[in-house]
Length: 399
Image (cartoon, rainbow, N blue to C red):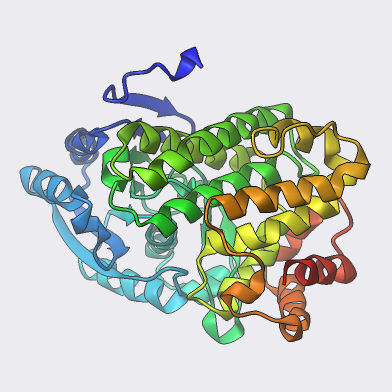
């Protein structure tokens, strides 16, 4: 398309509730961001990140220099793991309290950024804990300002009001959504993402695909979310194979990052439903499960379940993956099998058995989907009645 004939080195400002600096070398805007924070009287920073990508990506060299140049004091917590847990958030908060942090930086993919958002709430509500936050024991109305440097092209958390953290002893992986955790500034720099492994590249992009399929088909979906879904899926289908084949291709990384950002806006507006509600129990039970892989393995069954009510929308947005659909409810199997073929073609194994689940796990998974805080709300947005039998059927078809 002519619209893709863009200068990927031109850094754009994309404004929603968050100002995102987007484009190759957007990390250089960290100097401007820290200057703005300094003018706001902010100089004490908690940095929340994972073990190493904040440094290996090249982001930290820019961030640390900007801190030095502006005379900032900072504490670094790099103990966030994939599928982060409440104790990690509490530990980050404890470190932030030592310096009376005034802002929280999240550097990484969805896990560090979600943990940073959670820490920002708790630093503004210092008598509360992460368990209380994720068990909905209080409503968060305030948080410290948040700055995010996004290192993956999938979650969209750098531009929206959502965060996810697990409570391991209950095998709960709830979602929170509060206006106070929209980041103040975010950086989306595709050049920081070329070091993603093939699996990371694959599964974060599939996360974005799931975001828009769900956002376009919730009970509160709008034409806006359908429009964003159409473009997100087109871009991922076109550029994901290129990024898998040539990880350093910045044009592919640019458009995958752009697609993921669109997807984050889509579900910020129209929310999510059953694919995410069913995946969270998977990675809560087995934290080693990659979120995007769990979503991929569930997606064909979810599309099959909802196609008879949302066929026209699904036929439209899925056309790059399954061409020729018309929206007739008799096509539910065709849509489902077409998605499965596409997933196989890009290297996704088939079935939940591939990640260690079996039929005997279905009752436990179903119960977790029904009892985990916040997931009931997502299920209520499914365009079919997502009761126990429906949930169980989708899990069994995914095994």
